Image (cartoon, rainbow, N blue to C red; front, side, top):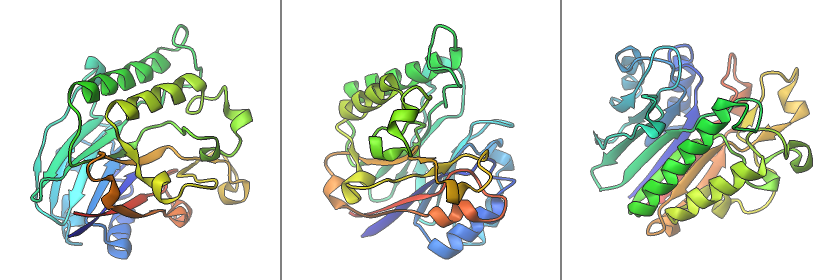
Length: 262
């Protein structure tokens, strides 16, 4: 059985419900994980997605910010969530498909603008969030699992438009990259996107601040798909739908896809 999973920071699921429906119609992933939904769960427009065949949802929500949702055309059950750093934020949710695959959907804190936890509480929050992820993976090795989401870190030099110029910019600083990699390694997760596309510049986010985001092309790969080591070899078909960033009133993120033969 081949399952295609997509992840997309939608930057308001209610504002961009039509874009979600368009992606579901055009690309038809089996599962779509959304971050930054900015909506209580009961206000997520599930009926719009159900009309496209996606009537199953597991989600955690908040009014106006954060929020994660897993939409599926396959039956799935709620597999819980974790309250990282004890802030009560809706930044993680998990769901389990009938074949036993567990899907974790994360929205890691962005970290503010200054990469110094002594002067920027948001940066400290981000590092602590990742540290708790790492501790969890160390205690409970993931099996038959996929982890996706806006992890808000571009780890490789070719995951950003300029490694040198972004070394002191939040999302690509050495401490973030080191923390990101030790977190991934703690669970023996495999970066599916880069396993499929090992070379070349690769981005999933372009700032709203750019007058012409495509021409400037100052992107970063902030959105990720990881697989537990036992199923990593079953992954294939990774792609980032850059063109979605150019849709009308878009999110600043593009969807990332991967398929798994399970």
